[in-house]
Length: 121
Image (cartoon, rainbow, N blue to C red):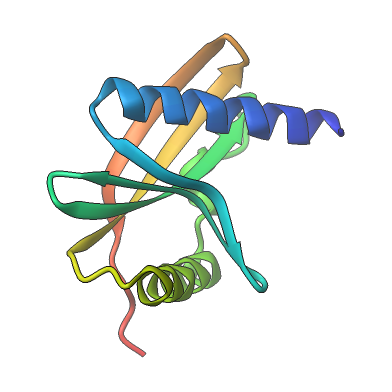
């Protein structure tokens, strides 16, 4: 596996541990349906929480969350809608980003709740 893939996997693992420590129930990781994917789907307080995880070694060039552009938001919302229909979920949904910066074992985690809302098409 390429080094950036290893870093991304370690960042996602750290994000899952962070969420568990904050009483989130992890429903799925890397859920896929066709070409749609959700990094983490969790639940807390009767709310479905869709979490996009972005991991970087440093913030020298940009913040990890800046990689979540309009196209990524659109694809994530479509994937979340598909997920909810597939599992018959009828509850509020929230879209978060977890920014992970550093090296495995020494990450700085920032949880951005309600990072974006579904766009109006």
